[in-house]
Image (spheres, rainbow, N blue to C red):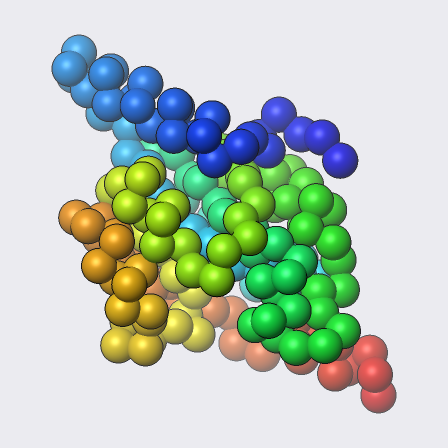
Length: 165
């Protein structure tokens, strides 16, 4: 599925570099980076994306990295993901708060954080800053870590369990 917001990571890095050149003219664009599985996209995901965009800066670009299928399976277990990566990326790209989407197949986003050098790195409320991957925390560089609260009782796992009953 194609969408103008779904780009390669290299293309997103070029957008970031262009934004940096605009800074010399006094035009600052803040880059916000978020990543996740986004399997069975639901209201909690939507709320989270809005909150991420609004919590950082009005003059910002929200970049969302989507875990590839093998990555989701490794994180969530057999039978996951429910929705293939290209379809998950498309659903996230359709959200108005999102500016760019890419799919990654690595275990962590350390490489992406290091190369993109975002101004903010946002995580959902199920993450405790102390439990985050140490390599990712190092790779984030000067990016400000923001943990955005979740909507209670809304999760993909909860939806899957409800369907199974």
